[in-house]
Image (cartoon, rainbow, N blue to C red; front, side, top):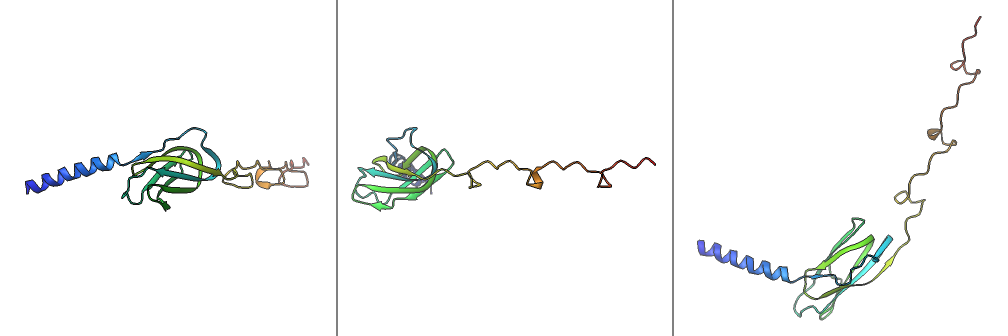
Length: 151
């Protein structure tokens, strides 16, 4: 029983170390890679060893958006990843395969407009909006707002 546990522990260590070395971080990360509105991001990984299978990417943006998915195009030693509708500055990207990972290109959508409640501050209420106006002072035509007649 002890040999079996020891062999399993050694195998786990070897596989763990092999897995840790088989990864690629993005090579061309820079602060200018930003979209104010949601953008479509295209990553390419080259020089992947033959027989690596389908790789997966994990990427994060300053908005909190994330992309974790398998490659959407697998060629001989190159794989492509497309992450859509992600906003903010690209903070990191890595894959689980050896090779050279780069951001190939990205296209930003329009930033949110003020008629989009998710992207704008609410407009201040106007006096046409009863919820946003001070109540008008009562007039003497309103018995609740007039001084009693001193008779």
